[in-house]
Length: 166
Image (tube, rainbow, N blue to C red):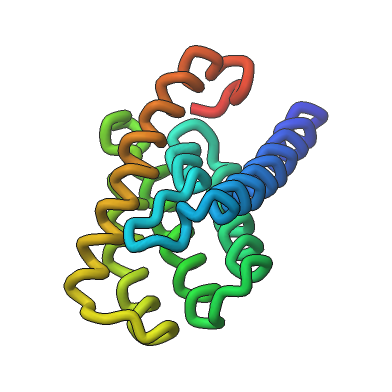
């Protein structure tokens, strides 16, 4: 019984830490002007590979994205649907966790397919086809490149950072 409670506590702490890291990394990218240009590179999106390691990353990423969008003054549709895109990507990453090289694919696809509509309807950014391209490029850089670098670094310490989470 104690081990079950300990595991639950570990997952809760991991989720909280991931959410906090997501918010901090979003603020850093915003401060550097990387999160508001045509091709957005958000360091926080590299964390979207974490469901590969732990299920705690799913609520952690969702809450982190939700808080980041609220705290950075995003429009309501962005808060709702941008956070939903992150949640969908996190859930699907966890589902396909057996395939390490595919870990960044679900968040890239979820954001590339959802965020351009948010940009159009919440902010009036046109043309839609260009948003698909620019969001996709930003997600490939953030999730695909930075996320996979993070995955390979964390994999070396997997047993210590994510004990029993496979």
